[in-house]
Length: 402
Ligand SMILES: [Zn+2]
Image (cartoon, rainbow, N blue to C red; front, side):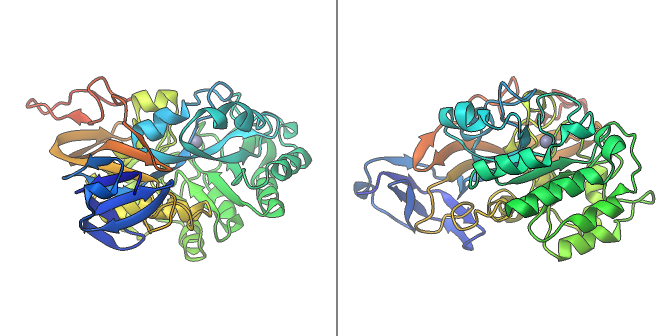
């Protein structure tokens, strides 16, 4: 007898190539069977999902859920299982001095799986700016914390922003890289100097530091230090990094996502591997809203649903080294499943600069299954729920940017 049967949904799992109407049976927290017709008598509980899309559990590769310690850290389940997301990668909200609060206070009280990166700044994002002196980075202490929490910390995060770069220059990402290599983890680098003070050419010396398996995040940023040169041309180091296996993630956030930059890099052949949110408390309200809205944005940019699902399931799972456990509905995998509604209509979404993109399909979470446990998404990040701003007959929209 199965524990749970999702009946009649359209399964879309790029990792296995499965696309079509199938039933999904779950037992003991694992995917037990996927087949065109599994009898309801074989399961203790059945949920009818006809007309919905059933995908591997969505993975948000970049969000901030160190609630109560890092400024603006979101309740993990609000951005997680109650938003259709089964796994959140916390992109370096904690540093060596604050990390202990993650296993002590955050992880035990949420249903969403959290995979944390450690910030090279020892106080993480508890204060803003993060790095304010060379002493903000303590490599020995960082290595000690990486060792203490081996298997939990997924990698090291560095942010290419001022004043960190003004104080430490390239020594800052080099130290982060050393911590990643010595701990046998990976490096995730934020690009885009939100203070707009540092030399944009820094990207040329940064990208060669990244090796296969490292992650570049915010690469649709319009801030200095992005992957486009002054003439809008993709810097050659970006293509070289992609070719040697660096993951490219778009991470929206409140300051680092531009449709114009995105179109230019896509037109020049550098497609995203992952499309994370960089979700925070204010980001959820004002700019990003949700992981499913990120999916909506990329459908609007012309990607197929299968491509979009790949970018928030199979690819992020591989990027965090969990491709054998997450990001797939293959039999025997952890039963992490997202059931989504794809609605037709006329909406508009905005980037952080206020540029608009009309969209005719909106992705909305319907049901989340985490390790076999079922969660119903909450009301949604907007006053009217999950859908983006509606296009009004006047040509305006129901909401607005930022
Ligand atoms: Zn972030």
